[in-house]
Amino acid sequence: MKDKVIIITGASSGIGLACAKEFAQRGAKIVLSARRIEVLQEIKKNELDPNNFDSLIVQADVSVEQDCKNIIEKTVEKYGKVDVLINNAGISMRALFEDLDLDVIRRLMDTNFWGTVYCTKYALPHLLKTKGSLVAVSSIAGFSGLPGRTGYSASKFAIHGFMETLRIENLKKGLHVLIAAPGFTASNIRKTALSKDGSAQGETPRNEEKMMSSETVAKHMAKAIIKRKRTMVLTPIGKITVTLKKFFPKMLDKMTYNHMAKEPDSPLK
Image 1 (cartoon, rainbow, N blue to C red):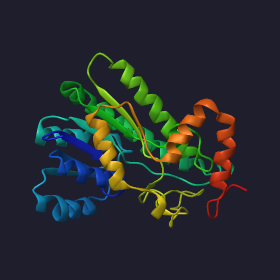
Image 2 (cartoon, helix red, strand yellow; image 1 turned 180 degrees about the horizontal axis):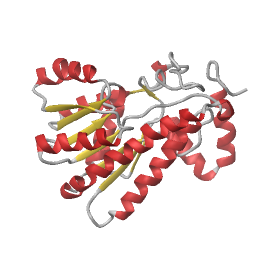
Image 3 (cartoon, rainbow, N blue to C red; image 1 turned 135 degrees about the vertical axis):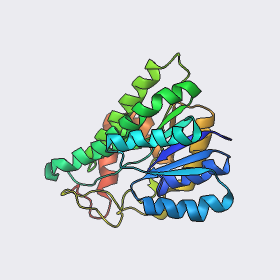
Image 4 (cartoon, rainbow, N blue to C red; image 1 turned 180 degrees about the vertical axis):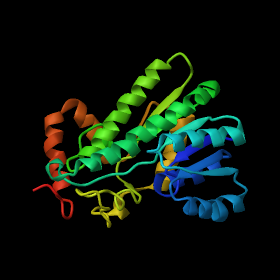
């Protein structure tokens, strides 16, 4: 990854921040983007610059097309190319569809799906020049529907279809397309997840200590990009879910329901 120019959206925390640190240590030039510019400035000042890591920060809300275009333009303006785009920015939700304000799904699609589409649209010409890597940080919820997360699963399924089609369209152009599904990871995405009325969920209902760390995910991500893998599925439960989906989908439905119903304050009965 030495001297590769890598753009990471949602880089202010969680998997995005862990990837920024991991790839910087491997010699890459890192472009960190997120809505919270003050957090990005602190990261650059306290963690990247002291280690002489080459980085650029760009404030952006990926649900806004012009913001996404600006990320790419600022990157090319400074570094002259794009080698890797990691579409990581995303939000989640937790509520039954029958209780859900439809605006919650719109917000998830705007950030998770359209954010990926917008960034990819403007980065693609540059990625084709470098025969680079296009990455979407997805979820097991993009392989199998997750009850209580209709909008989240819908956005991830949409991303899978989008990425798979781009892979085929550019089959002879040298573009690497990776769908990364980390499984349940210790990050703040559940704390910022939206409830049925669109307000932040607050404290996560899951035990973060038992989950894979963002740092471990970042190491796997680096290896998957270097090896130009098509798909990366992590955690034992994630791998089991994808396998059962193929061969025993009805059984998986029941197992998934029972598993999610055990969450504290689960919307499932």
